[in-house]
Length: 326
Ligand SMILES: Nc1ncnc2c1ncn2[C@@H]1O[C@H](COP(=O)(O)OP(=O)(O)OP(=O)(O)O)[C@@H](O)[C@H]1O
Ligand SMILES: [Mg+2]
Image (tube, rainbow, N blue to C red; front, side):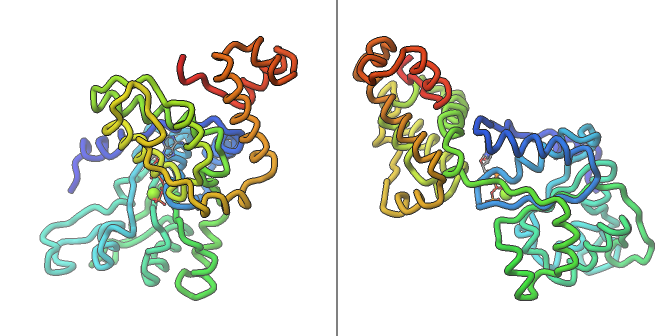
């Protein structure tokens, strides 16, 4: 049985959520509101978008913040063990059950349980889970004594769960129950404003880990990151910065250190972006280039662009144009 310190250890590992784009800031406002309730939340979005970090934020901004936050990756636990992992078992319930064991729901009592990759829960267990959500009670494997817990349930998946429901692979009653408060975390390509912020955040982290001194990203490197489509989302960006940090030799990370291929597929993704973002991305690229040509002198750059200097400095702020040489 895990001790109290084990629970605390499970508890402490929270991540920093970097957010700059209006779309994510808006989502965080929603998180603030739903954090106050006890309703179940279903977090949806592509792989690597930060669903787990959103789950952490819902817990941390809730009245349960000081209580346990228990993570369960339903896809990583073998099917036969998942029930006992979630609900615990009594001694002798099955061959390897040599002692009574608490499940994650009991460990999460008073706090929050995060069921990651929820779409991978086998159908029979889905029924048991539905009952926990509705009645907050369950039985350990091998026991008929009902246990009542006070646990808030958060779940996440990157699968198209509606299609799974249609195919009968996911119970629709459980889906409707979880989907009371859905949160969709958009892919990175739809929130380019987060790219420079995240890239610098990861660079700082890996510089500390590798004890390497890097000044930042060259303009070309930043432009490449901004125009890439990031199919693996933030996880891919994180890996990309780590790799660049390890192999980059120059004080500035160069485009070639990133190993990003701007292929036709990333151009196809333009279709997924809205016009405003596309225009802003182009504007940012264009202005950065002119600034670079004029040594970041704003008066000269404004002249070259044929706009007012004050307007240029507002654009620099609004479009988050960072002087990586500074
Ligand atoms: N906003 C963010 N700020 C900082 N780091 C982030 C942010 N979003 C995601 N990350 C980092 O990116 C990686 C992927 O995030 P996470 O594991 O939450 O993705 P996910 O949506 O759960 O993906 P999957 O569906 O593959 O499980 C993690 O290392 C996480 O720390
Ligand atoms: Mg995840």
